[in-house]
Image: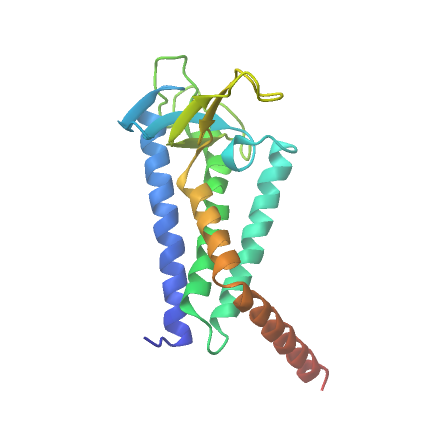
Amino acid sequence: MSLSNKQIGWLAAGVIALVLIADQWIKIWVKTSFYMGEDLPIFSWWHLKFIENNGMAFGMQLWNKVVLTVGRIIAVGVLAWIVVKCCSLNNVRIGFIIALALITAGAAGNIFDCVFYGVVFDNPPIPEVAQAFPKGGGYAPWFEGRVVDMMYFPLFSFVWPQWVPFFGGEEFEFFQYIFNIADASICVGVGLLLFFYSRDVSEAYAALSSKGGEEKKNREK
């Protein structure tokens, strides 16, 4: 099925909107329904476990909080510009645009938590759950909110044999990281680019570079 550039643009916008809505819906639900650390098994291999983190994807802690949030906003602006420009190219593959849209949506998803959640929600003691717009104010200033994570997939675990160097006797769990829909969106988008659309990345870069050069020459004339 062939779509016009405008239709591809609307498709990208739809993917971004869908991911952002789903991501925020489940975050707000978990934030206001679970106490910190609460674990709800859906299946033995899939739990909803409420945690928060101050850093990047999968709970990593890097850099100052405000710097990280501002950096995310700048990155999303650049990604959005790339998506718009790629949608204007001819013969662009739809899957490539969807991959870019997933990465953009994922990058944008955690920004809402960082910018707004510290002001919007309180931070009650366990086992109480957070309240939105509390009378006493939120738990952090603007841009310093914590990111909500809840997707936990303990697919399997085992204890390393004693004879294994360094790890002998220790328990190993796969997959131990807890993440959210925004994190997953980034991973899926990057995976699509790496395994299916790496050639499109090179072609889009070449086309945009050539297009930018032509526009510059036209302005100089």
